[in-house]
Image 1 (cartoon, one colour):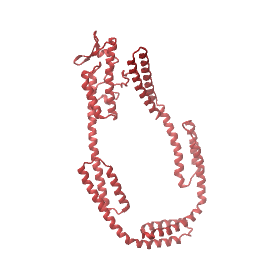
Image 2 (cartoon, rainbow, N blue to C red):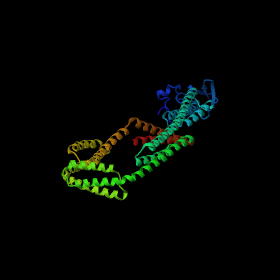
Image 3 (cartoon, rainbow, N blue to C red):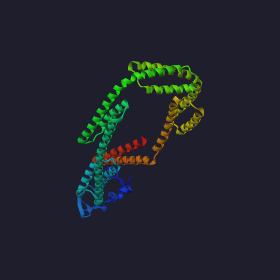
Image 4 (spheres, one colour):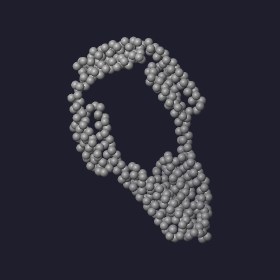
Length: 436
């Protein structure tokens, strides 16, 4: 790949996004492509970099030709350039820690004056100034978000207190209200970030509301005991009517009346505990006897729906055997044919509708998932990126082999390390393609 450094780290083109380029930092050119533009090596091997203030000595080169020495220091500059680009990229993506990025960028900028590199130092400093400004802005946003979270936590607890006070003063749904107060307490414990003083004040209000609710509920149930005797009498009247309707053959009106009786039963309230269950069993037995008779009459119609369900189960058995991973086009064609037959069969028992439709939808979703996955796995950009990483691994492995053949173990080990780094990136890219 073009535009990469000797260290093996990827060297992104400067400011790949237009919105970043427009914020004051000019592009930082690669030094490796034209190192003599930024420095020189004199006859004694002294290496110089050109800056706005003139030339500065950055080192001495005795290990080879002047061109090799200049290229070495240019690559070191490109390493710095890559490090700055990576800081900038992580900040822009939101993946980087603004505090760490700010510290790193400041250290890099402070070290430019003495850095042993050859390249466009002014452009790199300008880019670092841009990264520092971005990091400072991101830190300010973090502080603002923290304050917003605190305000949101206070607002949430205030809302919980207001709700608890409303329940305490007005609610007569005793079980639901009691459950809600317990849920409020559970949620209260999860809301963090409120200062101690504010939290204590809100907690006192909440505790007072709970105590008030408990007093009202106690008074209510004391009064309720007086009403249970009347409820017992009313339920006995409802039982008498329910038992009188057991032998009716007027299915619709009688079923409607049983529904009304059930509503009246609920309105009647609870009888004394020792008799309420027995009364309910008599009332329920009368209803069950009537609806059992009605069910027998409806059996013939229900059998038709059951036969329809059986036919749809046969279609589902065929559909669930489809293997879109093996042959997607065949699976799609078969599914279309099954769907056409499905619509022709007709109604099924009401209690089977969700189950059967859900199973068919699961097959549809499975085929759609395979189709989407196949498209993502053939994404040419992702495949090209994997190939680029693979080429770099081969390149550094070749460099290592040549260095060992020449007896230069240090350079061979360095090339091995670079190959290992690129192999790690290659494998990560391959996994990303495979997981799509």
